[in-house]
Image (cartoon, rainbow, N blue to C red):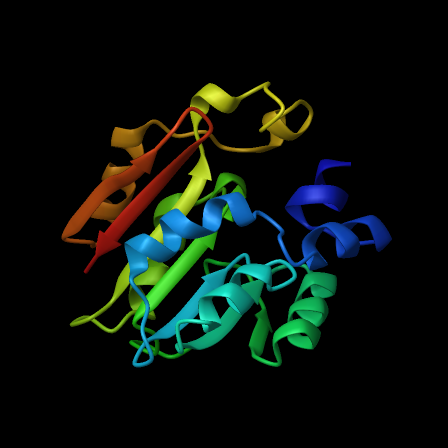
Length: 192
């Protein structure tokens, strides 16, 4: 159930959930504030789902692209955004070095088995002079709550704030910090 609904969404219910205009919209503004996107930016959204966040980010005038490991979400995001959306694992991102000025990742980081490898790939595709990432993930305090109920909570990875920052530094980011925190989520912001 967790894979079908959240980890690798597919099926009618998943398309309705992640294709909604407001999918995870309560997380958008902190990520957008952290990234401060403008018309000169090129954004990659990792774990883009149905593309709802990409549609909102495009309002800044930036160029958008996405990555997801669910074939159905890739098709849905392509249809809803018209952008380049790739089917791939986060540890093997099919984009060129330094192709983006910003990378976002909302909620998906929770499912990454290799967080440092994922962050290294995000760093690789970032412009070393202007690049920045914003990773919104589920806080450990949310485990077993409506924000991360069981069995979903048993399939995800919860990380303390200092652990997230350490992952980013190990992946080669020079500046890494928790930029936003509440009882359910954490926002990691990092720059090369």
